[in-house]
Image (cartoon, rainbow, N blue to C red; front, top):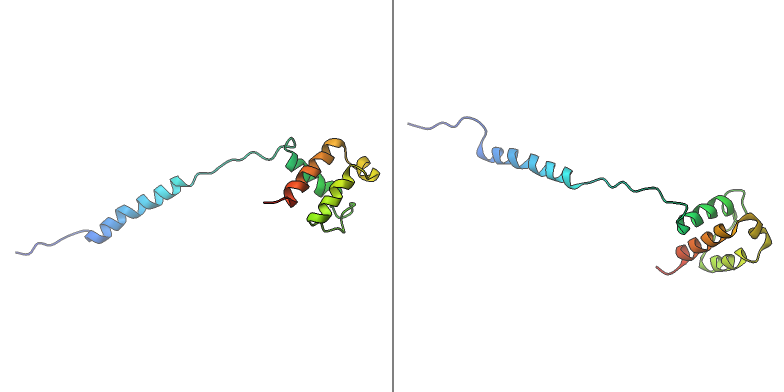
Length: 108
């Protein structure tokens, strides 16, 4: 007398049990990280925002200028000597722009 098997073949059964386990563990392993937006107390962020909004926008002082490391150093020196820049930016903004440019163009 022959024995007959009913149901799912053995290989398909193991795949059917393992595949959902892999999918569930992968979905649980990917956690979402909720980072707070940068604060204006952060000198890098404040310097970046100030530079792009007050100095390098389409109608701003540096709109036609492309900064590289050498030009950035010259511009940093001008920040505290150029009267136009001193009236445009307060001390905190000038300090933050200096910090931003030094970090952006500094060694990595």
